[in-house]
Amino acid sequence: MNNLWRWLSQPPTNGPDSIILIRLMTGGVFFWEGILKFVYPNQGVGRFTKIGIPFPEFSAHFVGCFEIIGGTLLILGLFTRFVSVPFIFQMLVAVLTTKVALYLGTSPLPLPPALPQIGMWAVLHEIRSDYAQIMTCLFLAISGPGRIALDYRRLHQ
Image 1 (cartoon, helix red, strand yellow):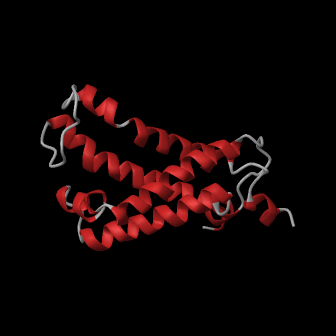
Image 2 (cartoon, rainbow, N blue to C red):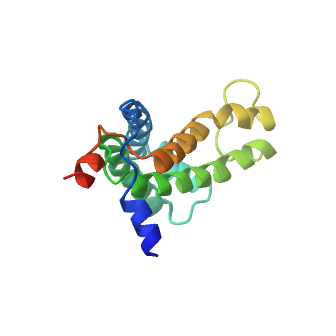
């Protein structure tokens, strides 16, 4: 348990300064997607209700808050692994709850506006942002936030 805590709380911070670009992209997407869950009910409670997420009102607000706070933390490079790891699981849940039904043609969500609308090619097209978020969070969890990060300051005082 101590090793897991140490791994989460002490990410490497010696990566290149350009890691900030990955943090800005990943954190920014989570941040504005979190805000959208509150601004547009069809992106939050309505979407969670349609896809069968339990307690959709609580769940949508919880996820929205986590995305806003976690996205901000990624942008700042603070508690990078504490945020990246749960975001990976969140995105896997998003894929499983939306893309499997799209593949099968049973999605309660509106189909994509243009072909392909169902099947493997529709999934591969629609999964692109989920895939990018999973991979960038995985990168940050492995590589750490880089030197231009609050984690760097926190660990090198």
